[in-house]
Length: 371
Image 1 (cartoon, one colour):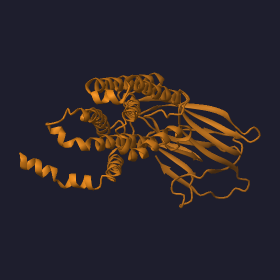
Image 2 (cartoon, rainbow, N blue to C red; image 1 turned 30 degrees about the vertical axis):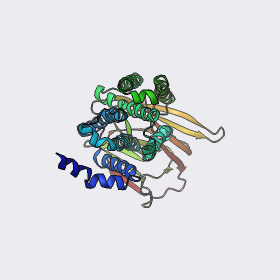
Image 3 (cartoon, rainbow, N blue to C red; image 1 turned 180 degrees about the vertical axis):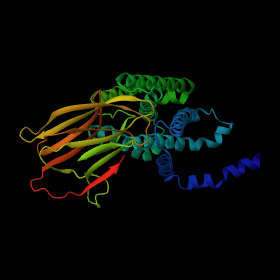
């Protein structure tokens, strides 16, 4: 047994961590990000659900174990050997969970009004590199944990209930609030060192403040309606449904602009229809009403004016997203956008384009793709 412990204490991994302790946090951060990027696909896929649930469960357990280290709870036990790895494990799970949410959010074709919440996630992801030095700050620990927990449940509960609306969002927030407060009070009761470092009333106030702030963001429509995501959005000259596919004809963008399929300048002829094609990812069996809000920019008032709302229903489950389209005729030249919204007017994305009157008709560089 002593030989085994000696080998462990002198193991190559432990020596590497100690030698490169300055860079260990960023290595764990990168490792968590790469792992999720390569393995996560659909939020309703069994593998994805299992990974995220394991991450959240492991984070909760590790947070409990780490907060009892200073109380000597693990002395003489197997856990004592791994105490120095607990902060890195916390950081790995923080990074893994936040990077997963960034991956899911970034798949939307346009962040538009929801960019503020996305930026918070990205900053949290980047800040994770620096949490190693501050991970002992228990106010920070539980604050970040609650934010991660809230986001986790807003993804998970709609997937399992196959429903998405404001009530489900409030339920998700309440579940995350209760679960965090239960973990916090449990650790607080078990750990004298934690009781010395933090005031229970203060940390509860911080968590409730985060809860209120996220709800404010939601009702100001600054949070996207996860787990829905706008996968594709194209302004097109024609859309035809044929043999179970949608054939979308659009003006193809120049090859060097590889990040966008269609041109933003739409060459328009009088009485021509302008189509908006969109595909929206939704978890299996989740049904939702979607709105295409057509808006034109008024240069005189410098405001966007709603021209028409056109809606349709979607059902989740298809890998490429639920496909649908709307169209308008008699459009006037100028700057346009189509907001893709839920019935609660939460923004999934915005498809912007410019209508340019084609006074000298000439062959356009059109491309037809099947979706």
